[in-house]
Amino acid sequence: MDSPQKILEFLDLRFDAIDMPCFGNVNIDYISSRLLAFWDDSRWLILFNSITWCPAGEGLTTILECVGNCVLGRQGFDSDRYLITGQIKYDEMPNDYHVTVRGKTIPLSELKIIARPELFSEYEPNIAIALLENYREELLANREEYGKFIPDGLTEILCLDEWHHPDWGCPPSQTESFPLIAEVLFTGNPDLYKPPTNPNTDWRFWFPK
Image (cartoon, rainbow, N blue to C red; front, side):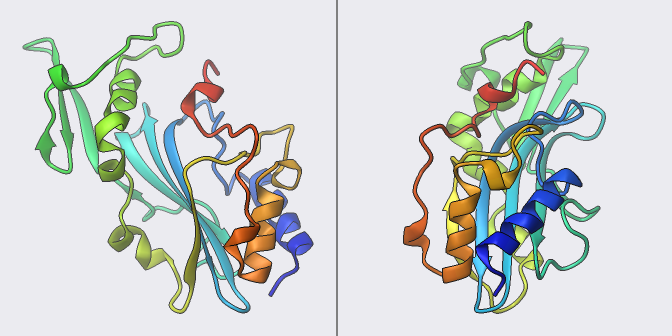
C-alpha cells in the first residue's frame, strides 16, 4: 500500500490536473457531493459522487470522478461517468418549469425554492438546491450505478457528506480532511478519520464565483 505521504502527493497532482472536483469551477455548479473511499491491502480509490448543474451541458447532471492507484480507465472524469438522474426543463408555453427525479414529476409547489439572482444568472440552480431537501439521495448515483467503476475486491471504508475540500490555494495535502483520509487508506482503519472543524462542501461556500 502507498504511504500516506505518497497518497497525498498523488492527490495533489490529481487536483492540480483537475482530476478531482473543483467546487469553484466556473463552468459547472457543484450543488452537493459525497466522497466514497475504497481500499484493500495494496489498492485505494476515492470516488466523488456529485449533483451538478451544467448550464452548457445537459443541465442537472450527476458526475462521478475517480482518483486512486487502481482506477479503471482515466483518472477523474470520463465520458461514461455521468448520469441524468433528474431534469429541470423550462417550458415557454405555460412559462413554467417541469422537474423530474428518476422519472417522477416533482411539482414546484412541493419545493422550497429561494431565488438568488445575486448568485445565479439562471433560475434552475435554485430549483436544484431546493431538490436537496427531499431528493438528494435519489439524485446521487446509487451503488449499482457507481459500482462498475470500483475494481473487484475493494471494500468501502469511508462515506462522507461533509469534509474540507481543496481549493487552488489549498491542495489536498494542506486540507484538514485529506491527510486523515490518507491515513485511513493506508491503515484500513476508518476510526482515524475525524470530521473537520470547518467543512466546506456545502454549495454556499463556493458562490458567488
